[in-house]
Image 1 (cartoon, rainbow, N blue to C red):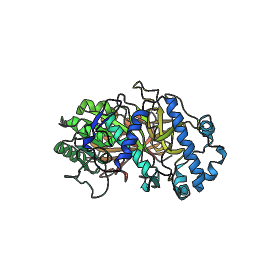
Image 2 (image 1 turned 90 degrees about the horizontal axis):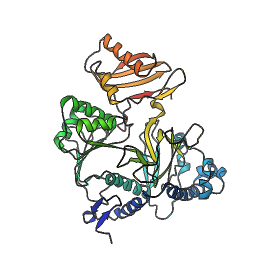
Image 3 (image 1 turned 135 degrees about the vertical axis):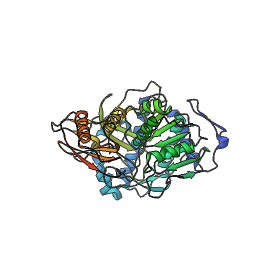
Image 4 (image 1 turned 60 degrees about the vertical axis):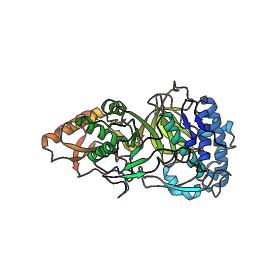
Amino acid sequence: MTEPIYQSTDGFTIDLSRQARAPKGRPVLKVLRQLDRTQWWSPERLAGEQFRFLERLLTHARQMTDYYAGRLLPVGPLNAERLRQGAWENVPILPRSDVNEFGEQMLAPSVPDGHGNYFPIFTSGTTGRPIKLIRTRLALCYWSAFTIRDHLWHNRDLQGLFASIRTSAKGQAMYPNGDRYRTWGGSDNVFKTGPSIGLNINSTISEMVEWVQRNDPDYLLTHPTVVASLTRHCEDRGIRFGNLKEIITLSEILPHDLRDNVTDVLGVRLSDMYSGREVGYMALQCPDHPHYHVMGEGVYLEVLDDSDQQVGIGQTGRVVVTTLHNFAMPLIRYEIGDFAEVGAPCPCGRGLPVLTRIHGRKQNVLSLPTGETRWTLLSSEDIRAFMALAPVRQYQFAQIGPDAIEIRLAVLRALTRDEENALSSWTQSKFAYPFRISFSYADELSRSKAGKFQDFVSVLT
C-alpha cells in the first residue's frame, strides 16, 4: 500500500493522497525513494555500486549484441572490481558515428526481466544527422524519477502553473494562445500536478514576453538564449513577471553571468540542467550551489583528456557517458561531443560527482591560427556591448576559416559602414586576434530543428 506522505531526507514533503492512480507511477516512486537515499552515499560507495551495474551491463552487451561481442573481448573478465581497478580503461570509446553506422548491431534482442518494453527515440542531430536509439521502460522510469528529483531539489510547488517555450514544431503551440495541458508531464504518473502551457520557441521575443505576462506562470522552462533575450527585453522596458518564481534552462550552454542577470532584472532564480536525448539526464544543478551534480545512479560519466585519462578537479575534458539502465541498446563509453569542467566534492553533503561548468561542443571552440583554442563564453555584458553598437536584433559569430569570422545578423535596418566597422573592431578585440571579418544578413536567424541556437559556431571542426 502506498504511504500517504512522501518525505525526502532533504525535508521535502508531498501528500501522496494527491497521487495519480496510474499503476506505472509505482515503479517511478520506488526509484525516487532509492534516489533519496543514494544521493547521500559517499563517492566510494556510489562508485562501487556503479561498477556492479557496469559489470551486468557489459556482460549483457557482450552476450546479446553483435557489436559489443567482439568489442569487449580485450577487456577480459567482466568483474566489477577488475573494472574499477583499471580494466574499465580497456573498454573502447564509442563515437557517435558508430551509433549511426552500427546501430542495429548494438540492439539486444531481449533484456532481463523487469526492464520492460522497447521505445524508440531520435536525437536532434545537433552534431550531425539525427540518430535512432532504443530504450526500455526501466530507462524511462529513471528519466521520470530524475525529472521529479529536479522539482524536489528546487522545492517547486507541483500545483503551480508550469510554462515552457521549447517546441519548434511547425504549427504547434503558436502565438498568441500556445498550447495548454492538464499536467506538467513526466511527473503526473506519480504526483498530481497543476496545468502546464507551451509556446513555440520561434515566436518573437515581444510575443514571448506578452504571453508570459498574460498567463503569469509560476515556472518557465526554456533555452538560455531565449532567457538572455527575454532578460534584455525586460530590462530595457522595466518589465517583471508577477507570479514567476523560477526560470529553468536546458539544451544550450548557460552563460556564466546569466543566473545573476536573471535575478537582478527579473527578481527570480535560475536553475540549469544537463541532459542528452540519447542518454537522459546527466547532471542537475545542486539545490544549494550553482554547479551540477552528475546523476550517478543513472549514468557513469567520465571527463577525459586527449589521452583518454580522467582529468582532475578544475580541469576540462571530453564528456564520455555510459547509460546504466538501458540494456536494449547499450551506450558504453559514448562520446557525446560535449566538454565539461570537473568540480570538487560539494559542501551540500551529496556524494554525487560534481561538474562546475558545461562548456559545449567542439563546434563552439574558437581556433586561432597560432594553434591555440579557447571557449568564446560570451557573457550578457559582452552581448549588450555588441548590440549597443548597431541596431541588431539577432547575432551569431561563425568561424569560417582559420583567420576568418562571419558575423551573421538580423537587423532593424541596414547598417552603415561605420557600424559594421565598429562591430568588426569589437569582435577582433573580444576574440583577441585580427580576424578577417565578413557580414551576412537574414530576416531571421533560424534555430535547429530541436529549437537550439548557438551564438558561436565553427565550421572548422
